[in-house]
Amino acid sequence: MRPQRFTDYVLDLAKNAPSATRVQTLAEVGDAQRPFGLAITTANGETRWQFVGQLPDGEKHTGFTDQPVTGTPAPTLGDPAAADSPEAWLAAVLAGAECPEISAIGRWSTSSETGAQRGITVDFHDGSRIFARQL
Image 1 (tube, rainbow, N blue to C red):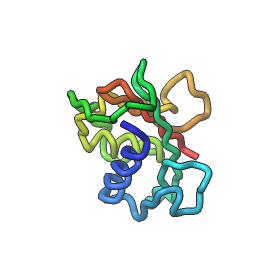
Image 2: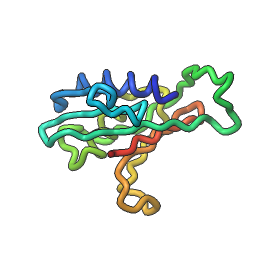
Image 3: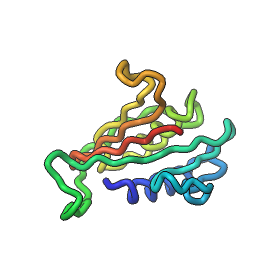
């Protein structure tokens, strides 16, 4: 899934999440440096996310059609309202949607390789990825 389509998808999911009070694109909040991402406000405050995509292995930007490939959705990750961090909230919202294009969701803070970075990696059945970095 390309970052533009992912942004639109998450925008819709987050707006419909009961714990979100406001959801805007980064452009709407004045961030012109990052073309894809969202600013999501919950009771715990605003969190901004940048979305960066990675094409499936061997694919090139020219000619890549971003056709959905479906399979078993990623496992759910609990109730977003009970999440202990913005990273956990976003991961739970995405997993709870049970999108058949998403094969796995990994939180960076629970990985030993990422240090202090906060974000999630979303793997898709077509081999593409989205890296959602908390700003």
